[in-house]
Length: 116
Image (cartoon, rainbow, N blue to C red; front, side, top):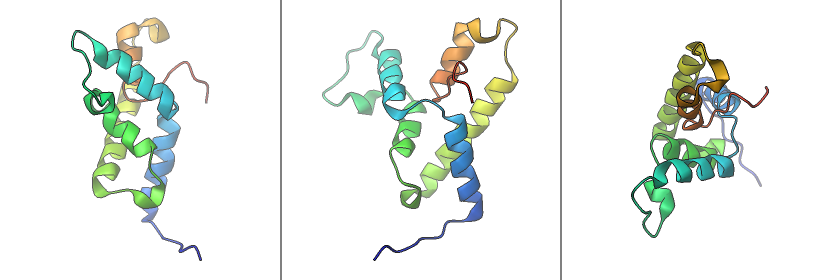
């Protein structure tokens, strides 16, 4: 028998907002973060531990079910949604061709080139 767990309605909305804003699939985000994090330092035996923040935290939330969220995960989701919305609202004059801006969004799991 499956037990139905009720979540706070705010968390339900946040979950939907998070998954709408983080539009990069988890494996694609992981690959991007590995590329970004490789830099001059080699990865250790578990590269996921060395992924850049907050991308690593966002990736961890993407791998979870809604019913398994912790208070820390909720904070990560809230922060990611706020940061993505803030960055997209501040779209630079060069738009999508501004690599620094686009990469900042990709670090958060949002690709401006993905149509909604």
